[in-house]
Amino acid sequence: METISRVIVSLVYYNSLVRDTLEYTLNRPNGYDVKYYDYKRNGIVNEIKLNTPLKAFLDQNGEKGDELRKKLEQYGEDFYSDTSTVIKKASDGLRVDHAQNVKIFESTIPLHEEINAVIRLHVDFARKNNTLKDKIVNLVAADERFYRAVALLSLNGEIDRQFAEFNKAMRESKGEPTPASNFIQNDLNTLVRCLATVRQGATCNDELYTDALDAVFHSVEMMNGKRAVPKGKTFADVFNEANIKIGAFVRDSEAQWRANYQPLLNELVADNQKAREAQAQANNTEAK
Image (cartoon, rainbow, N blue to C red; front, top):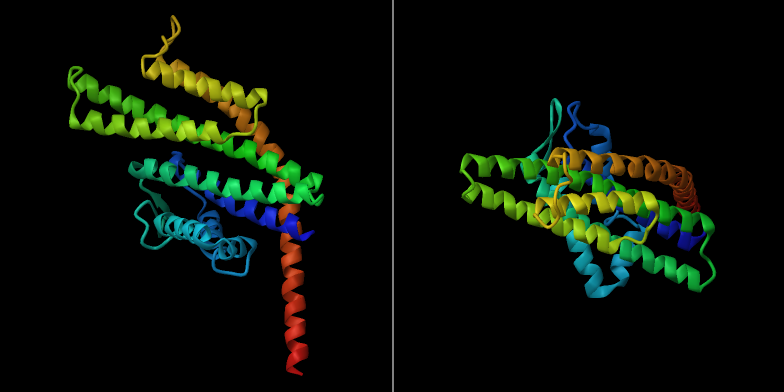
């Protein structure tokens, strides 16, 4: 694999680990895969310490590189360390504090966009130097779509849950704002801002994406009173219809992402193994 392609695949690999942290905002009755948590933890914590393209980029970019490194270190500390209060390993698997879901969104979505910008820098560099391969173009496009799908799925679910809690709090207080309803309102505002960031950063514009995006934003406008709920329907109907459209987008984008990502990740792993073996052989030769 060419050097610039290896760098881009490596960056996409790291960003996929950041993206998949959104999994922990979803309610999974059967729990979460501990092995996959360990895989993500290993990548997120060590890719910025070892001799990787991401570390090289951080090292070569002065103050901006240092700022991004600190964000990545903090991200690992917040969600993939033994001191995390959000995700904890226990004897019976992973324990996730869903009361801190908003913290996951607030951290993950801007960070993913920032790494996305780094990926696009490398893609532009490769394009200008006529070294951009079709397989990399396809990977970056597939990764972009799948991220937007996961973000819409997880954000819509959390907005739905929080809006139900908000309505419950307001019913209990007979329509008068309370500290509890104000707290939920603040969380909802944060989630809508995250949703706007997802829309603003998107480069995909296909029908499955725009149908899902429109459905989510329409439901938010209904929630805010800016759009009337369709006659004969409830908020639950609106959220469910949005989920159907998101589900179609998730299935399509995930299939494309896996088809493009896995072969290139396998190639990257094989290249890294060869490089390690060559280095070991060189070290042995020098020792003799």
